[in-house]
Amino acid sequence: MLGQLAYRMVSTSSPRTLWKFLWNFGLGGMRSMRRFRRRIAGGRQFPPFLFLSVTSRCNLRCQGCWVATDGPPADLDVAAVGRIIHRAAEQGTRFFGILGGEPLLYDGLFDLFQRHPNCYFQLFTNGTLITADAARRLRRAGNVTPLVSIEGDAAVSDQRRGGRDVHARTLAGLRHCLDARLITGVATSVCKSNLADLASESHLDRLIDLGVHYVWFYAYRPSGPNPCPELALSPDELVTLRRFIVEMRCRKPIIIVDTYYDAEGRALCPAAEGMSYHVNPWGDIEPCPPIQFAVESVGNGDDVVGRIDRSAFLKAFRDFASRRTRGCVLLEAPHELREFLLRQGARDTTGRGTGFDELVRMAPRASQHLPGREIPEKHWLYRFAKRHWFFGFGGYA
Image 1 (tube, rainbow, N blue to C red):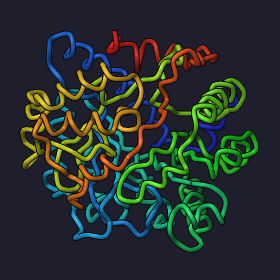
Image 2: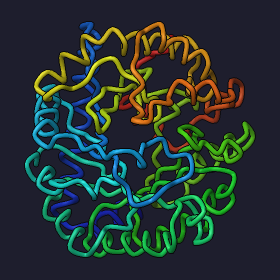
Image 3: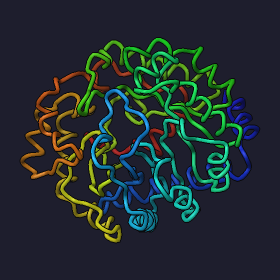
Image 4: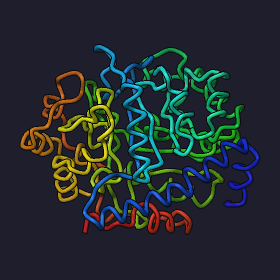
């Protein structure tokens, strides 16, 4: 399986994009994790991965989306973004997730990638705006992997994404990425309406036949102004999804990403571990994208490292979340989360002004933390990577 995967990576990626992936993300990521461990040991805090929502604008209206797309649009200042990336890179942080809204609506996006050739960017996109020219510009930068969101077949996609012909337009964008020989991934928010179709061997086989290099499955989290809680997975369905991922990692020549389980199959929260934080389109520093509350902002970007390192709010969140659950505190304890945020004096950073009310209306539900139902990694490489590279920190001890 590993030989097939290596052959696919080499034969379907341009030399520049493959080199940037191995050097910037692979070796650079390992160095970033080592520096993160040293910072933690020294009592300092800055994450090895940083997620930036560069715009609130989007051309779709997806179910359960937490981004304020109906109010006045917001864009992160381009110069501030550049300073954030530069200051973070000085700390060894080389990986940045670029989100929206739809980030391809952000002016200056391609120039941003080219101005930071030693960093690596994951572009979270619905794919509908990826033209052949856009894919070629991403290839020239070399240090970007598009992660294209696919939520189901044509009917399910239109329903989930709030648009027409979304599936066809998304697949067209995906093909442009693959034709440009970019290292390309597909992301799916798995819910009741697409679990059977997308958590399946046939779906993985279709993606492999297309040339997709990696997939990212994550459980749907009902949040925001239109949460659609009826789509959330039950505990049994969460276990089904986890078992499918673990089994397919041993059988399919495609990388399967998850960030919510350690090598032993125990749940974890990257924000509770201090591994990643989120900067929203207004410049607020949030624990993660769906928890839209903050105390600090990035300002002009020059002091982003100090503001995160000195943040009493982020430290308190790590303590609160890791004591409350190994899973997602937003899903399991929205009312306790609300009380914690009020005690911390956190601001509502939704852009809607309804964040605290939304927490009141949320009903507690299961997340990935299901004690006694853990499924350990079976493939040696995933097990090794999680123990020694990503998640071997013991943050919940």
